[in-house]
Length: 101
Image 1 (cartoon, rainbow, N blue to C red):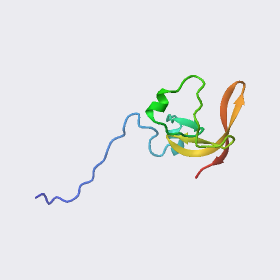
Image 2: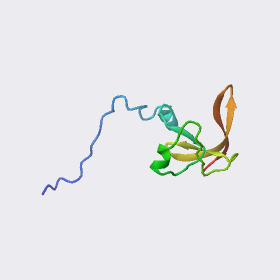
Image 3: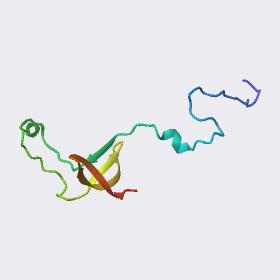
């Protein structure tokens, strides 16, 4: 058995590991370049494989939400907000109506 007691360990600086201790960059600045997956979910539906195989161009899939209800905005599969679908210059987007806590 070793009776030398606890020893102090000192680690060197990790190369490319971000701002060193005492730097002026805020913690959130370190995360600003992290990619996130953002989805706008209109609704959901469960179908059997045989029903999916029957889909053709023009098929309609009924969703679990009513027309005009807010869409869910998800970041990395976690709902963060609700909003409404908007169209600007032929492209679709979501206007945030509520931030979910």
